Length: 549
Image (tube, rainbow, N blue to C red):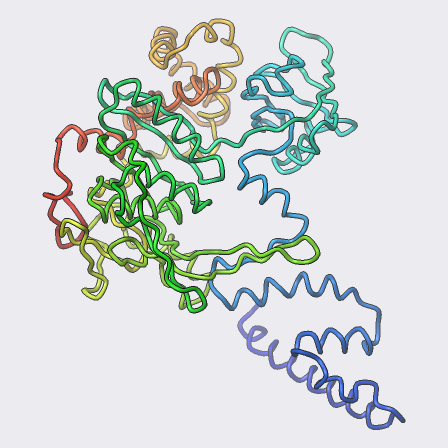
């Protein structure tokens, strides 16, 4: 659309509407009994009036239900970025996300080269009970062909998920078999896990990765933490990077396990919501464990509540980069037809009084684009690029300076890692070759690899068999020519990612995370900080970022 059209289009629409109103008024005057007489004043609001007018007087038949469905999101755009409408068709998925389970067949799959490949079969789940194996290719679901037809993830999930105890037939191609195998599977409850992994980094330091907050998160977190505590953890690194948040109840319960009785966790307040303060009870199960929280620009909502409570109470260090800045509280209100409204009812504030919600004064689109502006301003690379006004200055319980105004600032800033970037790696990354090679390698070496139970065993095996050389040849087959200079720059990153993904394909996250740790600069920095045995109260804020860089 050119500039001239952009200017003229609203004018033309306005003229057309005006002409329509004039003609409508003329017809009304000529009618013996006006169709709409008095209706404009008899309805509770303009929207109801307009819909009623359309129903009773529009020239053609229309589905006002469809109009309403399309109009509601447009109305809500005039509010904040997180007030939203959930149509009936999306409610099941939303409920599954929050409850932490859904009904399906119990496989993790990946679509590669237009083929649905089984990555993992959930132990004890419906698929494992009938004999589906990692490495199987699912080619049909009931009567639908899903191989070689450019199928998408959402389509596959909609075919495999369904009501509990309902049946589904899948056709599978398996290495070593000439004909497809067919399995009839009875769908069952499949858990959606919030805690990806918990393991000991060294004899004193535990690591736990929380990827989301749902109704089951607290239970999973406690199981992971108890495991670490039993293994001798005196310190724990809690990874909340890229965690978008979720259940408020879950995060409040988690924080409660680290604070002393009466210490504040957060408070909420809104125009129609009186101030409500949440304080720690007397649980404090992990009051003696040192805490290090990792966040990044995609950590939001409940993740920020956790990090803010740890920081403001001087209970732990925050490491990484400034979080997203989502500090609004939504209440989900059911509507009569089974849909729901997620209405923002309050803002949440950290114990020091910080509102970490980023500004949305310039509109919702600009709000979501703000993350790209932060990249443009080099915020992910340089701590000094972040500036705060004195009016946003707050103090923690121990007197450290922290700032509000959009996200949680870390005590220790870690820039995004660009050291392994090269044109060669960029080509490999864009084509997803490390991931696809790892699957193919795991598939072809499955018999040998399944005997391994630790990350180190995978690394030793792949080094002994020169897996990196195999990958370089594989990439060349896929159109990325060998590049000696690129391998010099990016070889370590490629090799480490490749091993980590192979280990994940065979033994899951407990194989992946210990290997990927070697090139995870934020985690390495967190380990370094944990070994310095600093007292939180003694850390003094610098001019540009809270804490020591």
